[in-house]
Amino acid sequence: MNTQRPNILWYCTDQQRFDTIGALGNPHVATPTIDSLVNNGVALTHAYCQSPICTPSRSSFMTGMYPSRVHNTRNGNETFPAYPPVITKLIADSGYDCGLIGKFHLQSAGHRTEPRIDDGFSYWKFSHAPRDDWSEGHDYAQWVSSRGGDLDALRESEDRVPPEYHQTTWGSECAIDFIKSHQDASQPWLLNLNIYDPHPPFIPPKAYADRFDAAKMPGPYFRDSDLTQQIKLASLDFQDELRTPEEHNAFQVQAWYYAMIAQIDDQLARILATLDATGQRDNTIILFTSDHGEALGDHGLMFKGCRFYEGLVRVPLIFSWPGKFASGVQSDALVELLDMTSTLMELCQVETPDYMQGKSLMPILRGETDGHDHREFVRSEYFDALDPHFTGGTGTFGTMYRTRKYKLCMYHNKQLGELYDLEADPWEFNDLWDSPEHQSIKNELIREAFDAHVVLTTDMGSPRIAPM
Image: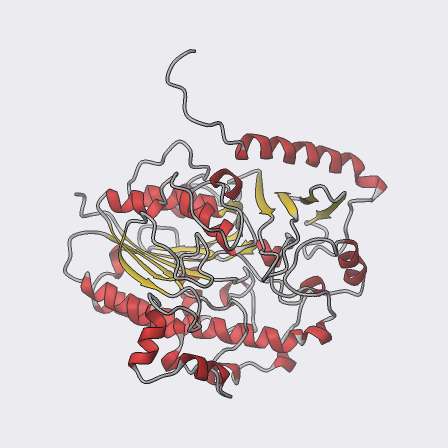
């Protein structure tokens, strides 16, 4: 066993947009802990998830393959494929002690505790969501109950769930216990901490909600023309109805959303302090990311669904390892969360299987490149991802193909699409799909996107073993 391999603290939030970090340009949030990771590490500012929905995104980065290639494209799925193995299984088999806290969500956790797979985790503290919906196996609800709390009653109270009973706090308590238990261990560890916030419902503890004034929020990216655009796309899946910012109460929702992120930041500080106190910080890589974004009122939409706007598919991705990685770097290279997967494999010194589709970020992290060029394009997929009975699914299929300059979105079998020039229109207000001046570039991008889809997502079956 190579005892010099680094520990990995992999902190993954749920439904957090890329533009929610102070050090990356948002003056309205309160994220001093995450800011310190940016200032002492590498922030990939153009990192894209491979689906704007939980299960396909998580299935993708846990295997290193596009969701359609994994054959796991939907929320609410009954099972998870037996192959390929998740990366924590591969990393555990290489000698790491792996732990999971919170959400896993590679298969349905609705009306049941999510079944375990051969996941490689020796430490498993499960909480799919901060509700008391599971009669057994819900470690967070049991933690609240053991402290005399009633989770359902707290959620309905005026103050909501206070910090001392909150799932984000519970996750930190578990992480602190895990880290302390490894203080004198020679075995490297990987801890995958998946808290539920800032996923809706947007109900931060009152102590945090009171810190953010809706009247001082910048509000969503919205123009009146968005109403016409979204009516055009109305046949596509989405979890909420088209509304104006006022109808969405979007400024207040943004304040609550930022309050939830502020609590995340405070709890992350406790975990990092434990790493310092136990002498493990120097040999621990901190990875901060999220599975996908949140519309937050942009373009008249709230929550998530079959759209590929920046707020939905672009997520935080920060690596910090002072003394080993570059410091204070903000890379604008196009990156996929698949690249995070391949990077984790390399960091843990585990051979990357040929089927994995990511591209390691190590040259950027080590400061060996200028951090501008990594991929020529990034992709995201939405394939019938939402359940029609519970979350608004109607059987929509969509793909995104994004280059440095353009974003092409196609909604298959709908005769619908979008095209944006992100250099001229970074917040995607001016759809060029029908623009006569852009038909040539649109057709070229459609060809490129189709080529990428065929090459990157086709399952070729079992490998060759003979010439015939």
